[in-house]
Amino acid sequence: MNARSGGSDEGHGLAAALRRFPTRSLQIKELSMRDESFRGMCEDFAAAETALANADQLPFHVRDARRTEFKGLVESLAAEIEQALGPAKGLS
Image: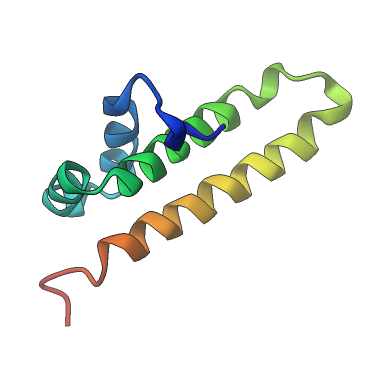
């Protein structure tokens, strides 16, 4: 699930990051234009969200474990994106 190696739909990752952090849209767009690693991180985030959304289609005996795994991955990648964005501007 590593889109950092050249995913074909870079807009998908950007859209996922914008959905997760709508108040940071300008920062997300600016960083994605200049940082390939950040774009890859967003693609990975989008892929993890998709995997989580599709977890209910997995066989019953692995469904809960995979859902937990994918949810953790989504949250971990969201935290990584947030860290890359730095402190939110305008907040004291």
